[in-house]
Length: 261
Image (cartoon, rainbow, N blue to C red; front, side, top):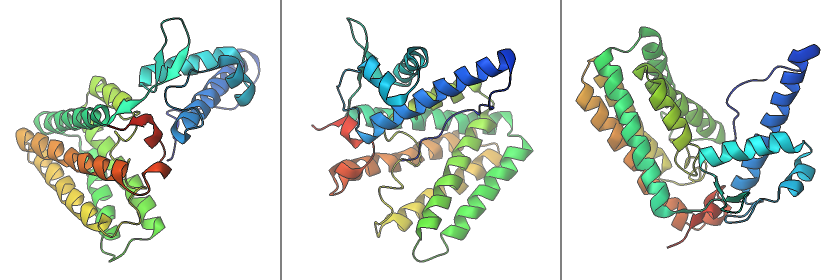
């Protein structure tokens, strides 16, 4: 699963700016590496984090490691222990299902606000272009690896634009936090299903909902936009069940964090 940093850090110059840049680079390195270790299972679910061992493994000082641990607790991937330190958090299927439901609720609210407030023309145009790109991908009878990669990018872009059109930084921050949890983001299951013969059909259904939401936003139909966007998230609920119970479930990044019933 692809891990992407939020924000760019310039290379170090001289003086104070160089120090700040180096600190930012070390913090980013620690955060990305720790998150990757959790997702890959290198740090097992429920395991206590040995801070000194992490320092030696990642090769940065304890300060950026501690900052990264605090950030990962805020994201929900770690939990603070009563006697100090952190452990890798595990999730029940219901936890993930609830996170998907909450994402759908907040994305539905974004769609309604975009419709009622009037979405700006630029993100509206970009959202339409993203969906036109997905339409082109789905013209093929079978999808290549490149098609899947492009679908993920365009799908994520469309969802980002819907949040942007709402004009709510508060909702955007909450969605960022929720979508850092395993399988809670809109494209979480695409990679796991790339070889499924049913996956193109699923994309077609999801794409029809994308267009319905965008049309509702353009026509200032807030309730309709919200309802379709919330229904859209239900696809992920089905995908969650299929991914966790499927034959290749053990190979999916992050699946080891989900407790079996």
